[in-house]
Length: 348
Ligand SMILES: Nc1nc2c(c(=O)[nH]1)N[C@H]1C(S)=C(S)[C@@H](COP(=O)(O)O)O[C@H]1N2
Ligand SMILES: [Mo]
View 1 (cartoon, rainbow, N blue to C red):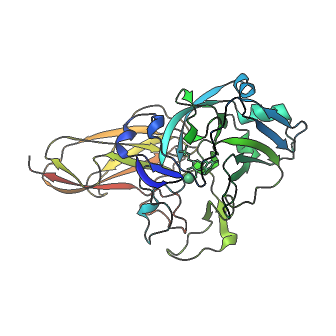
View 2: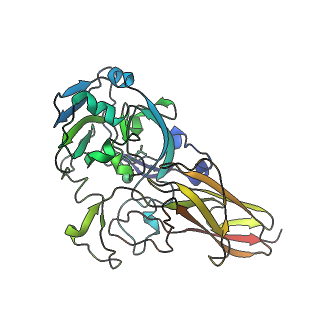
């Protein structure tokens, strides 16, 4: 893993692990703001469901396991994935391409959990608290989302990741999976769900994780009143091979990568090997599903030695296409420009 911080751990997945549809648990990227909570004993675990409900409940892991279990593949991408590519440079973790992963998540629907407590119709938001706490001035990790997304049948409280019990570092025993939304929404170590009337106003909702409503002059300060909560993630593709600055012998090359599009699905990925003059369709594998990525590849036989700029550009099911330029923003979020790598092809 690429180590950005070690206490708490912020770990990026190296590109070589992205050639499989599911990212193995032990190489799945890790993002933590606060010291990891003490390991939660599964027998002592309690999930409190509270707030605007007719019957507050405390659920055990066994209660959650008794609810119907659902499994779906979904990407988790950190909002700051690709921050290192912005100019002017920004503070924050310098994530390259690997603050992302895809796993098969299994657990009960949030909708089924809320039914046990009887959430009021007037509760427009769901607040979620993770067991990690702030130290000194840093705040508790709490997020909220509109109830409409919380009640979506794809929104889960995951108890398993790729068929295994959730690893401790990824939120054991239970984490939210909010498919297609920024990674921050997928709260780990969930200990409380509360039905509420207004969005949570804590640090991790405001000013944290907000994006300018109107594009800013690069390097300038935003007007805080014009920052909005980030929800769905944009269409994007990543080239996994060849890697940037690779040296290749003249001959056939397979260019490969993956592409995803938040709540949309991927219908097309194009590749250019001449700096964006001409584009060819890559071959996609897997199914056209929302929330999930698709692997893609294309064969390329350069005619001559030389330096080549290889690019990939994805289009999603809503017709959104990756831009040439990703809009600069003061936190370095939502990088989704057309991916590009430079490769030197040398005489065989
Ligand atoms: N409780 C808690 N949940 C959290 C976080 C956190 O710091 N604490 N980080 C969030 C962020 S910013 C991301 S990108 C994802 C990362 O999930 P992972 O570490 O399992 O890859 O978890 C989210 N859930
Ligand atoms: Mo994140």
